[in-house]
Image (cartoon, rainbow, N blue to C red; front, side):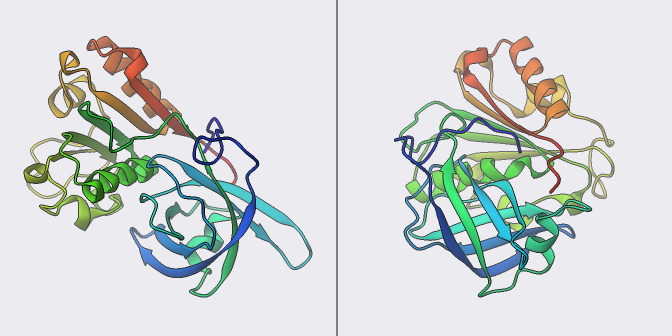
Length: 256
């Protein structure tokens, strides 16, 4: 992912590499895996921030990638969800070979603009495209852990139902509408049996029905591929949302 870097807990300072050890790996989809690490000395992070992961081969060759944190700070524990990139250098190892007890190097946290704090009081609209759900899920989890009553709405666009991340959690009453988080889905390639809409790309009607009215002045967070982010941002502004309240994260080819 390409992001603007603001280090640490927004306090500045030099970021240090530290060793993180895999504790658990859980499949989210056929090509994505959530990784839980222990990283002694981790300084903490905000929902929406990310970190750098570095792998070093026996011959000294190094490869480095950035990944969004999938959950709020929990002591020294970190949670990432990684999508495997075909022919990638890092993601195939993280999703297919890294085993509990194996180490990687991590550096962070990074990012200070695309964040949500439990002290924020405005309604929140989250719009995710594919793996762009990861930092937005960290915000949903941070809300729940903090006991926040700020209303959230999530619009999640995926190609097929099988490619939804966090499917069980997003469908649980502890997350969905009766707990203050309304979740709606857009499917671009295939829909579940009995789904009321055909496959389609996200559009004005989806944002209008699944989002907040602009007069509510919601904080809007949009994350996904570049084209998706640009489309959603343009729709939000066209519907009357203040562009200053629309925060975006986008990703593209990085070599995986």
